[in-house]
View 1 (cartoon, rainbow, N blue to C red):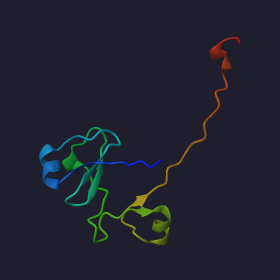
View 2 (view 1 turned 90 degrees about the horizontal axis):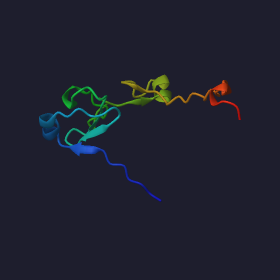
View 3 (view 1 turned 135 degrees about the horizontal axis):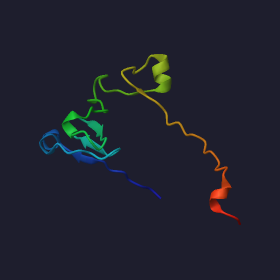
Length: 98
């Protein structure tokens, strides 16, 4: 089964004039400048820092951790998601006698 994920997308003029506040983790795509911005639930669109490049140069390029260590695409570093192991709930008295 295939899925398609679509981001909110508008041209630069529409984004700038509406200047919405994107929710925490909500993404928007500027089709004019080919940039993605991710909301924090507080900051208006015009004040968010774009994470996408312009398609041609090195501006806005995000390096993976291995690229950053090698000195490639070193304008920013994307750190991998770290998953913490769950801590077992030790105090079972909360649930009462079984």
